[in-house]
Length: 220
Image (cartoon, rainbow, N blue to C red; front, side):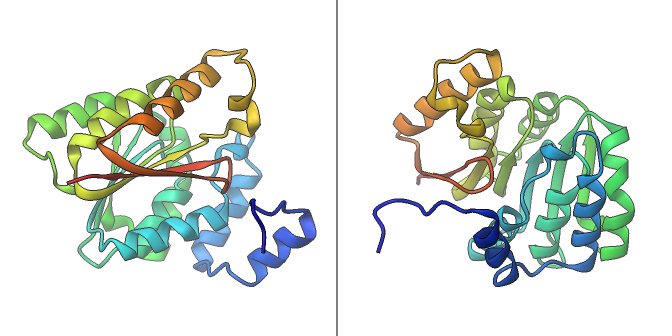
């Protein structure tokens, strides 16, 4: 029994992966390729990806949103968990980064599930709202510029259905959110964490997985 989350040293983390992780070969290959990228630290951890897959399956998601695609590991991960007719609206601004993942999407047979839109995410989400897509998505994953999180949240809260989930990455920010902020990103995350904790429109839980993952369920 334990009254707090266990600390993971390298040995225990390796054990966790060895006894839990079930990656598609293209997931593993893309994760390895991204690890060699100069900005590879932006990729989500594999255990977080597997957890997100389970969530997507548990809620029976068909339509999802991703804000911040980077090299495409998280999009590939979620796409593999979606049914044959499932779709991801993947929002990013970098053709350079997202192009890395496209061959892996193709080889995994899920490229047809991923609609990649290269434009500012707020603009893309506003266009979907204007097209009458409020309440038509089941799941959203926010992992982009931290100063934009609050705006993405408000838009996603309109776009997801009642009972749908919004997941926020990096909410612990290497522990910096628990200290006096020294930069705008930390301040933005601290403000968001305060807001989510007190937002009566959602049920929520902050989890110490990866760099911190908050789940927000849209209340009926």
